[in-house]
Amino acid sequence: MAIRALILDFDGLILDTESPLRHSWMEVFAQHDLVVSETQWASLLGASADVPEAYRLIEQHLGHPIDRPRLHEQRMSREMQLLACESVLPGVRELIHDAQTAGLGLAVASSSDRAWVEGLLAKHDLIESFDAIVCAEDVARTKPAPDLFLKALEHLHVRANEAIVFEDSEHGVRAAKEAGIFRVAVPNNVTKCLPFADANLIVTTIAEYTLEQYTQFALAAQEPSV
Image (tube, rainbow, N blue to C red; front, side, top):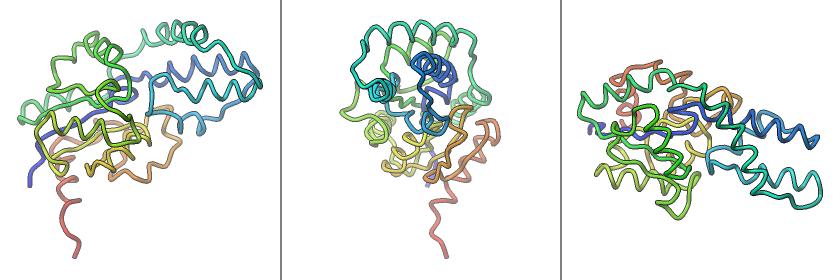
């Protein structure tokens, strides 16, 4: 058996969109005298770029509905201001380069919408690096359902045991587990407080190991125990 493809999450894995997202939401929460812990916030991530649960937390706290579209517009303006300072996370470009050199397929599987993912990939000159980009519009269910990863496998023409997933959220790791794929958790500044019990391997950055080492880890995990 060989590893033939890598599947990467986008938000918080390729680009740290999670810190600007958290910062902008924490400002909103503070305006409403609402306290949300780091662990509670991190547990909400990975299923949707807009974090619908955050709106519900405010409405439950206030006891009445809020103007969600207006809040979304105001908060997104602040998030984009913060996001302008972010760059591609350590090890990502090197992993992509090594995968291309080795002839591996590359895909992005993200619960965010296509315009968001492709726009930011293009901004950072990465969009041409991927053979497939699977986003929220492409599936019936986003993470933690396995649909995004199953669709990515389909596009890459590989089986689950021929791929490695890199994820920064527990929702994403759980989805990859449901899809039967080897899972590398790369917690970021926002999700590092979570245990990632469903990950096969946890690293501090993608740069912690080489592509060859990641491949060896994945293949070893498939070997039957004695």
